[in-house]
Length: 333
Image (cartoon, rainbow, N blue to C red; front, top):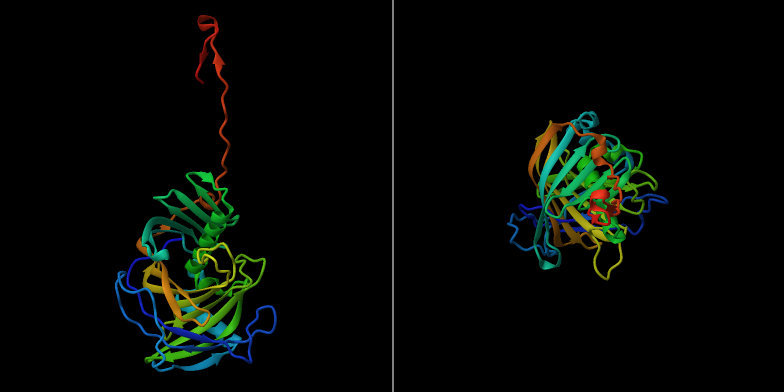
């Protein structure tokens, strides 16, 4: 996976789990206690991607949210985005994007066309035009092709499937937060610098559309707009875009939503930024940027576009022996 271009922000967040309340989706669910220190500083892509913690910064006021209160915030956010019906009623969406990666201290960029067909499930097709790679996710699960052929590299396929599924989930937010596969754990009300946020923590049931049963996401909604601002993602699966050489999961990642612009009446981000983080929530290096350079809505897509192509093996033709005029000669097929 590659990332977005645009402004970067210096964000410092400290996440402290309560000793008396251990969050475990398979047992008794409790809410983590969040201590957050956020420092925003506008900078260009050439600026520092490494973030540092300032112990001298003031701590915010916080308040816990029950599961019922967190679920209410999700409903208010869906309403602020136009309602789930607005998403389900949408036709096809096409985004021209630039994916920038900052892994290993090197900057690489790949253009990609992202096609989305809202529904249940939402279908997505990501075509890296320069690499001629296609990642897909839809009613037949995730798939990947390279140069029109199914890729047999299991590690690459697993990573591509994760990328397609993850992007599909983020693109549908917040409309998918009321689906049966999503488990709402609770959350926190956060205040810093005169701004208020509602941070809602979710998990996932196994065997559903989003098969990440060990993962969790803490989604920050800005008050009073209820617009999604960022997410703290705890990714427990291996073979993903967040893997680190020589280190086993879980991986901790911050994702920021920036520059919301209406598309078909629904606020749609024009920039996602991904940062590696520590388990405490302290931000580290920037991983990716995904910038939307152009967007179209109300497009007609056939569902078959989002299914894995059926690749027929090439037929090896045998040499053909000529007739009487060329007896004994072999011609090319």
